[in-house]
Amino acid sequence: MNNRFRFIAIALIIFFSYQSFSQTQVLSLQQAIAIGLKNNFQILIAKNEKQIAHNNNSLGNAGFLPELNVNASYVVGDYAVKQKMTTDVTPQNLNNVTDNINAAVSFSWTLFDGTKMFVLKEKNTGLEAYSELLLKNEIETSVAKIITAYFDVVRQIQLLKAMNESLELSKERERIAKTQFDIGTSSKVDYLQATVDLNAEKSAILSEEDVLNSSKITLYQLLIVSLTSNYSMADTILSDYHPMLDDLLNTAHNQNTNLLLAKQSLTLSKLFVKEMNSARLPKLVFTSNYVFSKSDNTNGIPLLYQNVGPNYGLTVTMPIFNGFNLETQSKNAKIEELNSEYKLNDAQLQIDALISKTFSEYQSYSTMVEMEKDNIKVARENMNVAMERFRLGASNSIELRQAQQAYEDAVSRLITAQYNTKIAETNLLLANGSLVK
Image (tube, helix red, strand yellow):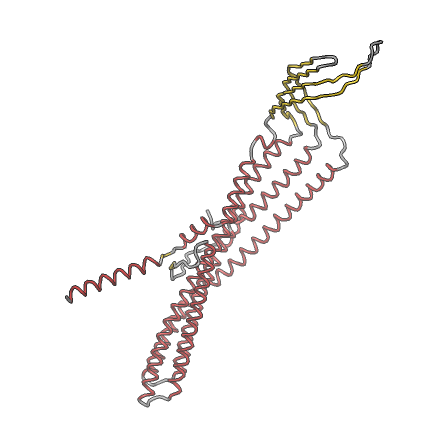
């Protein structure tokens, strides 16, 4: 019976352990990014805008292709007709009922429109490329936000883990202080102070748990998943990035999405100037129609009129004067082109400054990480020595608390430096156009 109960107990433990594990899903950074990009509404909108630009980039939309239309009408009229002849015939008041049938197939083809159709095709191609850059920019921005939010959760997990480790040390400190007080080798002050510090750490842990929960909600909002999801993340922040400033600047000039958008905007502005100039040139259109027209009259001359056959010709339109509107539009187009050049130059300066500043921050944070790693070793050893001295009664609670606080601060600084290094790395990759391949 004992073996049977033992078997049942082990089976239940395994079952509930599996249930608990299955409810907590491990979420890697790559998985978080994949989920976020799949669900992000702004990215879905940008994809649709890109598809619209692709659909608009056609020969027909640029005006290269002809137009073919069919027109038809049927009109019945019932008119009171008064006739007075040039002869001596007596005038008559007649009732004339008419049947008019008209049908035509019309064909028109713009043979030349001042090169506007060529400019429009090139412009539509440029707009499609611009929409692709907007989509990439939206993806890059979303990825950067997800990375920042993901590692903020990891940072809070690390801080909470460190605080729980410190809590165990505070519990041990309180236990030793109480024992020493009970046997009369220490004052009650040390015991009470240890209790106060222990309760303070418990309160800080509760606050940190709220911060962690808030960080998870922020991440879940970016991923567009249920805010009650129960994902577990990594508990370390690693960085194996060794950038060179010159390489970052050179790469950014060719790959930074904002710079590429500014360059494409300048290209579109130049095409708009060409489009305005093309409106000054003549336009040549070939037209052709195949017509069927029939008119029946109950009275009058003629009683029947019918017309069947084709016609064709050329139409030339030459703009002469339209209230100086073309001149105004051309001037404005050139001003817009100049503004696009200014925006491109400004974007280049902003990107160079951003990369230089972020690179300096990355170097500083990386140095802090290595320094705090060494500092933690010293702080841990100092804390262990202080604990042993306190255990032997060679020091008081205040000395131990100071050593413990120094270690906690060193751990917190290391975690913060690792997080800041990762964020600086992300911003550098974003700035030089390497975050999303």
